[in-house]
Image 1 (cartoon, rainbow, N blue to C red):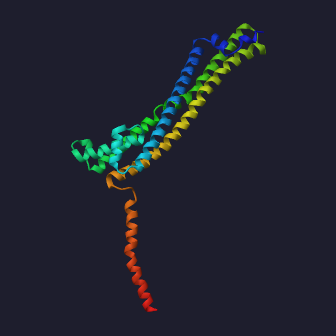
Image 2: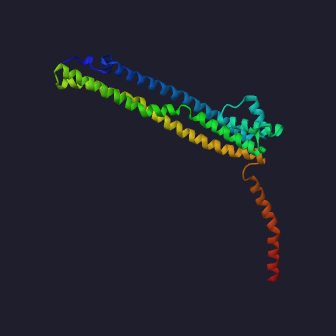
Image 3: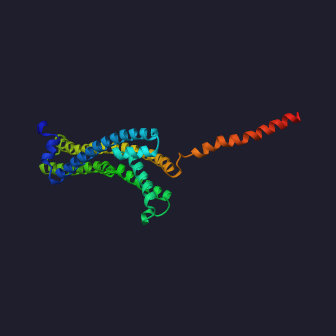
Length: 258
């Protein structure tokens, strides 16, 4: 019986052929790539959320869109909401100065601003989803790469045992157990990638919904000069005031009839 010190994952890699070592190298590269993406996207999302909160707080407390434009000109756009605001304000000013001088600027100012906002939303969506395909691919394929390494290792272990002519349990358990570790390595690579993909996807959906709502508000400010529903809210007191004389006349007529 071989000493237990010679049984283990290191011994399996040392005894593996080119295919086994290549599969292990692929899993290592997958793991490094996934953790680099997880760290970079996690830090990026944290900074994006912090900067977005600061800008939105400033935007809703600003006295006018001119103040927002001045802030963007001074500090630039460092988050999706600031980027959307900067591009929409620039589109409004550009169309007011130059009009529809090119095919890309055709239509009214409202149409041009709408196209600009939609373009920025598409750009931000693409930026948010960058790297997610890689995480999804690693999460979906790493277990199968590990499984293939296990099958390959078990096959060669059984061939070596058969050639030695000794098929006792102590001769089979070590090599087969070593080969099974490749499946565990594949799962260890895939699980963090899948969890990170789900977390980033949910965060992107939430941010996308907030960005769509903000785009609707911003479009209304730029095209109507007021928030959505402001005109209806302003008309409600006017309608109540207009109906007051009618109610007074009806009350007077009812009193006279009594």
